[in-house]
Amino acid sequence: MLFKRIEEHLQSVVAELCPELDHRQVVVRKCPVPKFGDYQCNSILGLAKRNGSNPREVASKVVERFKVDDALCEAVDVAGPGFINFRLKVSALESVMSDPELAAHCFVKPVAEPRTVVVDFSSPNVAKPMHVGHIRSTNLGDSLCRILRYVGHSVISDNHIGDWGTQFGKLIVGWKNDLDPNALEMDALGEMERLYRMMNQRCDDDPAALDLARSELLKLQQGDEENLKIWHRMIELSRKQFDEIYSRLGVTFDETLGESHYNDRLSDLASSMESAGFAERSEGALVVFFPDDKELKDHPAMIQKSDGAANYTTTDLATLDYRRERWSPDEILYVTDGRQQLHFKQLFRAYSKWRPDDCPNLEHPWFGSIMGKDGKPFKTRSGEVIKLAGLLDEAEERARKIVEEKNPDLDEAQKAEISRIVGIGAIKYADLLPNRQSDYVFDWDTMLALKGNTSPYLQYAYTRIQGIFRKAGISAESIDLSGGIQLQTEEEIALAKHLINFPLILQLVLDEYRPNYLCTYLFELAGFLSRVYENCPILKATPGVRSSRLALVNQAGIVIRQGLDLLGIEVTDVM
Ligand code: ARG
Image (cartoon, rainbow, N blue to C red):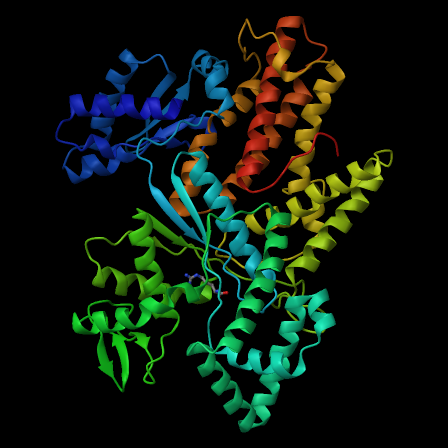
């Protein structure tokens, strides 16, 4: 893209004029203050300083040469202590905008060095309904997968289902004695949750009940046929319900492997870590210490309890090793809430200690909580966790009211489809819009508003573009673009400049695993588009201008649709 071309050109100038500086570290970014330019390079500053040269002098020298050679930029100025600002030539912008191949892929070129990335996300637990806490992991993880793939990486989405643990002892006792088959039929996860709660209470009150649960757990672990059968059934029923939700959300996984899948690796793993000297016995348990790590020196990781049982960390170590063997990933992302930060720090440190030469880049893009309007964690009125399925139903119902109001004449099937797209989109967007690390307040009215930074607003911006084409009576494919896109007004130029920055934003998202940058970008895009509508007649313009403007807004529509798709949100032609 243009900023890449500027960057490459700048690097070659630096390499030629100042071989003492590392030209690969020269990067070009969006200029933070538009009145100074479209792009900016502030790398000369640090590079020159470190080298003992005067940054302003170096920058001026570079700019002189850049000006002589380049057809991309209008004005290249040195500002402040040694920043370089670039303003694009409109002709360069027009030629990129008029290139059908670049435009079709929203100006994104596949990355030069594709990586293999495993994304571990969603990962709900068997026999527990998926709740609002899982939605953030699901949305974030799915969006990251989509963006990684779009720019050309090879992605494996992996749902690491919690299907093993001490809770199954209690669940099996409950299942054997108190199961309500009708309730199981109606809402399997609800019934299993009821059994679990009931048994939890019973075990708290009665030590004998706890003993029974423990012995059923042991039987399960030792391969008792009846208990295994019940356990398998619980997994099957849970997965069925999870899959219903994933299909409503449009989320897919390349792999779904429960924690239990790694069971037979656990004991070997613990003993091999012990014999290699990475783990040591401490009060009977097997522990990995991190004496040289400031953050972790007081937080050793336990990888085997004193009774010999494995835990969450052991399973995650085994999972990591399995993923390394199977896919040799360059990178693994774990998308969970912030409360698991210590766990992942320990896991990453322990693994890199154990496999220093084949440790992929491990990242934990964590997120904050969803709060109710009262500022407390989002719960039902009676204080229970909010289940995801009900939340999605409500989103569609509420969106339905908007559709009825705006477009009462649509037929039933259309209304249902649009309500689904708008309702689900609203929830996802509201979830992805805040910086992932901050908590946010769940508020129906804000997320479903047709004005403001919301998904319905962006979906509406998209339908408005389709409306223009309907009114013009032509399709986007039939626009006569023999004269290319010409950018005559300030508003058109501003919109085009924003459009070609799409790849830059995706890069920013992937640098920090923050899809919220894409939300902000799309919201700004809708703003630039409105300014074009306000100031540049489209259908009433002369034929050449009309074609050019139609092509420009069509391109805006393509980027909105693609951008929303990368957030996992659909669009509709009418709303
Ligand atoms: N099942 C866990 C939970 O609900 C999340 C698992 C995350 N992934 C992992 N490899 N530990 O909290």
